[in-house]
Length: 473
Image (cartoon, rainbow, N blue to C red; front, side):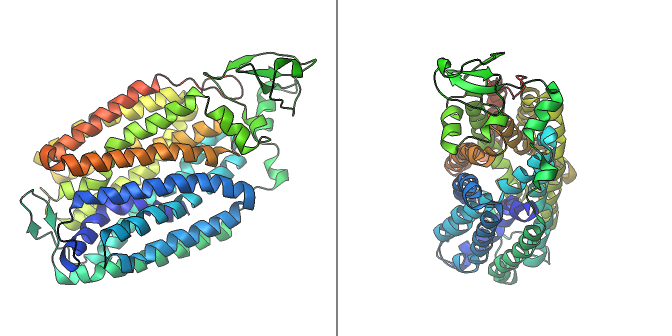
C-alpha cells in the first residue's frame, strides 16, 4: 500500500512533463517548473488534513473502512488529472495536490499503526520497514512515467532566458494526459491487493502490546500508570486505572515517580484507554511534541527544493532525460532503504542523536550539491541520493516518537499535527522558491536548504521526551 501512495515522490521527475504540457497545450503559457512547488504545497495541506482524519476515522469506523475511503479518493483524483491537465494548473493543484493528498494520508498511518501493534518493542524499526514502501514507490513509478511519456529519451528543446528548459515535442506531450490514467489504474490494483492482505492483529496474538512490554521490563511487580496532578503527571500504583484531577483523588496509591508535562507525557499503557480529547489536551502541553513539529517544518522547507527541483536543476547541465529519471528512482531506493536503517538507529541511540545525524548530514549535502555541476553526472546522482537517504529518516523517527510519547492508538491522530508542520514548510518552500528562484538561482535555494537543516540541529537540543519506563526517547 505504501509503495503506491509513495508515488508522491515522483513529482520532481513528473513535473517537467506536465508543466511543459501546460505551456504548450493550454493557456498557461508562462507556467514555470518552479511553480510545481505549489502542487507540493497543496498536497502537504491535504496530507495534514488526511492524517488527522485517518486517526479519527480509524477510531470511529475501523481501519478497513478508512482504507477503502482513502483508496477511492487517492486513485480517483489521480485519474481525474486526465481532464485537469487539459485546463488550468489551479485545477490540478486542487485535484492532484490537495484532494489527492487527503486520500493519500488517510491511508498512510493505518498500516504503520497495525504493524506497531504487532511489534511494540521495535516500533521504530517496524515503522521504518513499512514506510520504506512509501519511500521506494518512486523507484518504480518514476520509470513507469518516463518510459510511458518519453520512450525516445527526448531532452527539453526550449530554453528560456532564465535558463529553464521545457519539452515541446508533440508526441511526448500527447502522452502526458494518458499517463494519469496509467498511474491511477496501477495505484488501484496495488492498493486493493494490499487491502485484501492487511489485517488487525488478533487479540490472542497481540496480547496487551505496551502492557506486555512494560511487564517484560519490570517483571510482575505492580506497574504504575499516570495521573495528572496540579500540572504534573504522577505515577500511581493502581494498574489499569487512570484518574485525571487533583492529587487527593488517588487514595492509597504508591507514587514512585513524577513526570513534568514539559519533559514527558502520558504513558502508552494508559493512553490507549483515553479518548482523543483527553490525549490532545495533554499532548498540546508537551514540549516534545512541539520540538518534533518545528523540526518537521524547518528541515522540510529546504529539502523540498531538492526533491521537487532536482530534475529541473539537473537539466541545466545534463542532457539525458532518462538518466535524470534514473536519478529519481535511485534516490527513491535510498529513501526506501534508509527508513528501516534510521529506525534501527533511533531504537539504538534515541531521538536526539538520530536527528543530529540526519539534520547535520543534510546541512552538508545541500550546501555542496552545486559542486556536482563540474563533476561526472554519476556524482550528481550520488548527491541527490544522499539527501534522500538522510531526509527519509524523519519519517521513520517521527511516527515512532509519537507512538512512544502518546501510545499507538493515538499515533495517527497526533501524527496529523506533525503533518501540519510539513504543510507549512511546503508553503514557505513554495513562496521562497517561486519568489527567489530568479534572483538566487538554484544554488541560492540549495544554500537555504542547508541553512534550514542546520536550524534543525539546534531545535533538536530542546527535545526531552520520555517513554513509559521514564527513559529518554
